[in-house]
Image 1 (tube, rainbow, N blue to C red):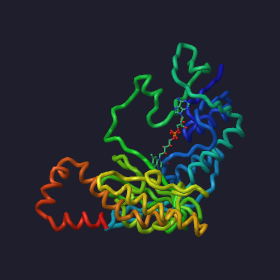
Image 2 (image 1 turned 90 degrees about the horizontal axis):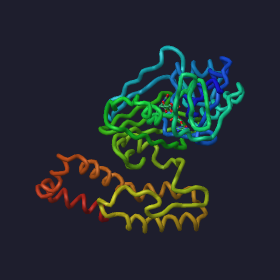
Image 3 (image 1 turned 120 degrees about the vertical axis):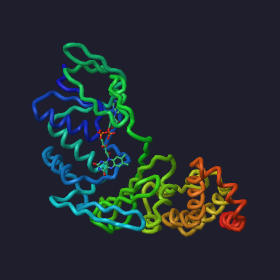
Image 4 (image 1 turned 45 degrees about the horizontal axis):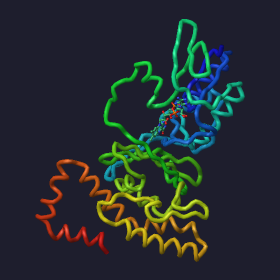
Length: 326
Ligand SMILES: Cc1cc2nc3c(=O)[nH]c(=O)nc-3n(C[C@H](O)[C@H](O)[C@H](O)COP(=O)(O)OP(=O)(O)OC[C@H]3O[C@@H](n4cnc5c(N)ncnc54)[C@H](O)[C@@H]3O)c2cc1C
């Protein structure tokens, strides 16, 4: 019988497994995914997080972080760390380093999805595994927690995380937290030529749409390529495949035709790397206006005022329509 079965091989599961193996336990990790797993994450390791990693013998490569900055478009406040530095580390780099450390101490990782668990006085059964103890490290929405009736009522509205890596030299050694009405953006330096931006929001929607809520950040990264892009090598995305905010402003076909022209120009010039920047340029006005209108229309009191406002201010309404129509 295994001493400790860990379900979930994310950071929590792998850290548990490493500690367990070091304590002399036979540990098996059941993780359904393969390799270094990526995930929407701010990728900022605080000084205390680095101290924990150090104790695990895990030293992932990244960029030093010396504090946290909060800003909301008008104000900014810096809080330098008083003791120690943190580190910005790409999620896959962190996960790879944890996997290496787990392998070094003899943790066995099985790629398996654990579906149901049961227990008796002597141990726990989970699929094909039988163990003395089970550590459930199966993430935020932990099905195991739910199956045991340990689910806590959620503290607030559901939030979604989306992340993008932008190819640019970091402009700060602080993690910047940008605050907007319905979302936060966490900006973390993770390499000499890369900044990670994680958006946490209570509304569904794509990265570009949410980024419009952070004009200072949007302008700073404008034109810098990111991964994934509207181009991957020699494959370029066009039309709805390239990303579409909403049908609200009736722009889809016009944008598809505009992007088609840009795509062919990039192909003719053999410069696929220019395509994403050009796509952004031609779609910016649409993305900004559509995102703003969508935000307003999602909020019931504002929604009911849209038509009366248009009737009361026909010049403004005509201006917005023409901004989109030109
Ligand atoms: C937008 C955002 C930004 C964040 N920024 C930061 C930050 O800057 N710094 C920081 O310290 N933290 C940050 N966090 C939090 C951090 O990402 C989490 O705390 C961390 O990922 C928790 O790790 P975990 O191992 O518990 O869960 P996960 O990383 O979710 O791992 C769970 C694993 O379990 C596996 N699994 C699930 N069910 C099963 C099953 N039945 N069978 C087999 N495998 C299963 C999954 O495949 C997954 O690999 C952020 C989170 C979000 C959403």
